[in-house]
Length: 226
Image (cartoon, rainbow, N blue to C red; front, top):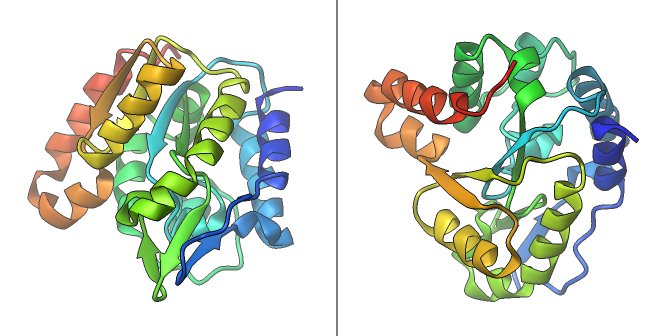
């Protein structure tokens, strides 16, 4: 099985085997046949090989990006315009997706970038509370209850074909500290490099967006090998 085959098998078997705190719901877009078909097109387009990649870990999918398309940091607009994959969803942008694809263009586009990197999240499934996005760490009971799920699914993804020398974390605060703690005990990677989260950049540092793209390019470019 190549990278794409393993990835698609992973998505089709994703489920959260825990009871969530009251008022919190899980988002699992992979239960939808349309989303699974779009994911099949995406991963077979960019990952139909056995090339090793470096892992980039976000927090968890949001409602308007990966929570719809099933592809991390990829909203319906970027999916169609940058990846060339037509999709039926309303063409609303998601801020983190805007930054990620501006950064991907700096690498020359999706084909080169995805040959070298695999984007996922600490939790591959997203969460909502009161019809709003919820990060896994926003509720301590949620965070504690899904830790086994997080560890198990990170181990599964490392078997796709991932470099273990370095992993990249999107988020320099809570997400990084959580991943570092897990890494200290589980030894996923030799080292973890934190990067400012795209949402933080787009909300609070928009005027410096190009500076942050160059930061990403410098850090990730140390690994990209063509």
